[in-house]
Length: 119
Image (cartoon, rainbow, N blue to C red; front, side, top):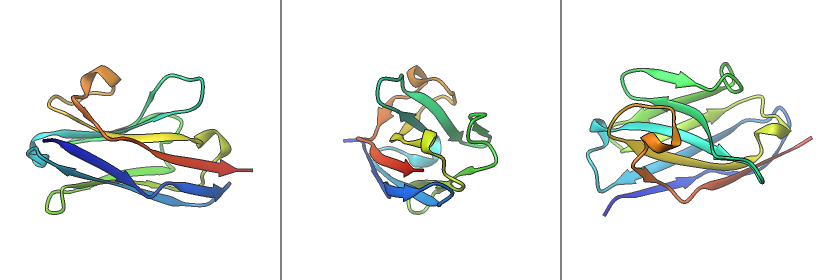
């Protein structure tokens, strides 16, 4: 079955960096767009970044976050720099048959990893 397993979350201070990883199995990785989303307490899940042959970022993270993917390791990464307290959320990776930036565009989801940024 399809599995997406995130790792790398944790508690960091403002301006620190963190890299999230998501290992994907059970699907043809290179045939799927990969995305990162996040959900803060009391808020809706929101788009962070996505990548297939194109790359997109949310305005709030552009210039600070970088999404990348390794087709050999079937892994997608999210490098996060200059972290802010407002970046605190559960971060989810997701796979989509068709590229998009909406939650509904994605077919498979990981369980999420918590990122907490203290001021």
